[in-house]
Length: 227
Image (cartoon, rainbow, N blue to C red; front, side, top):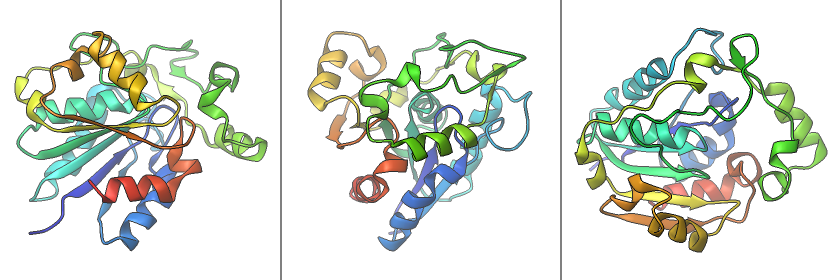
């Protein structure tokens, strides 16, 4: 039986190239990674919408005749969960890195100020502390220089979930700047209602800040390959 493909979705401001290190490590472990450059995040389409991004993710899932593990990072955790909702029979597992899925009717990523129709990278101040603790100054400069402003139609898009079979798709939460114990408490307290209803949720720790695909690609690939 063929291994499931691993579809990789970056969070805000990231294109598919952010997964290069992880994808290479996965290939060395005999796993097939499919990094997705989401519409509006690296293809020059400033009018892209959240629906366009979901369409691109589903195209990656549908391109493989088997089943897929869909990995979402940060804001794209919601996008990965939307893929499970749209393809509950094709998504074998959802992996959430440094984030949690939004509920139906919630905003996708309305976190920062929109300027001239896009959500630009806001600088490092909002990420002071554990988020960026393992990024040195050259790494921060490189990240900021490569950051892609996210179209307003993506950032302010509305999450739509319609198929309760998504709750039967196993979920793995990779915990970078927070601990598995903290994530467990958030789920149990009702702060993450989508995961509170999920049938199977595993929590995995990784010693990193918010962007382990940049700072810990080997360790992250090891975690993903072991799923």
